[in-house]
Length: 353
Image (cartoon, rainbow, N blue to C red; front, top):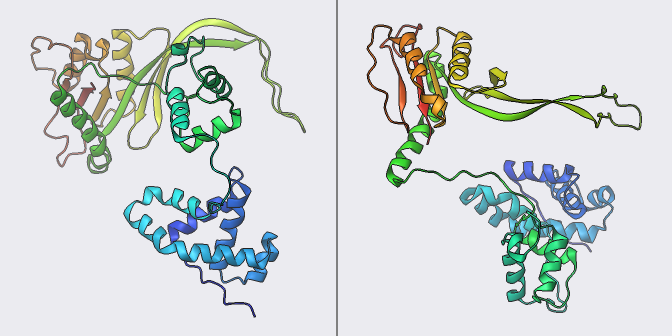
């Protein structure tokens, strides 16, 4: 006589993750299948119905129902204490249990040496490459004698388990600020400006934007028009092109809406170009208060920019000497801006560290 099927309970967050697993085309088939078992069990389907839908035997369905039932209290604890780790905890629950068998072929020390090598730049090994590939990493492991033999796939598995991706890189900018306390104040000031953006916009219609330039964009013209897609064929892009020099994109990112607007595309990004771009930007909403965040490029704190802001906000104000380059705030603010009146005539420009 068969036993009673284990009762399955799931929370809303767990259900969302399981649904994602069950519909995924990139997860392993076993994860997809087991996620479907848990979801169908939660819908009060019998083991026989689930077995017929998933192609498994009733016994196997019962195993995974019990596995989820036993793991559910711990999963709930993860969800409450560390919700960002819930996905990996569910993945671990649906993973095959460790099986007995022969011990690992490589020692922990050898695995650590492989991972340490993956963290080294390839030029230290005298290789004319900038990024490791798994095959080149495996060849270097063998050349150094870390292990007598190892497959490329096994090296890839070790990297995956350690969440290492030596073939990828991201851009990084080190701060030039020498005073840690001053740098911390600058960071907090800029971050607080971003936090306040939505409230200021809702209360007074103030616009907070982040402005920056992208230089050296190649102006390329394809030598022939593209060919549209056809049944069984993707769209085709002409390979040959003609260069028309480079151009510069000056863009405005609206912090509240997330939209790019009033972009400028031209050959240069001089002091005059920056002021002209700001004039066009403010003209899109001339009655609004503007808070504009920029970096420490010298054109972002030029004398002509100060003169423009002063003329826009307080034409009668006398300008003093220009302050040294660095973190600063240029601008003026009318008392009416954040008061009862909806009209405003303010521009504030912040420079980030």
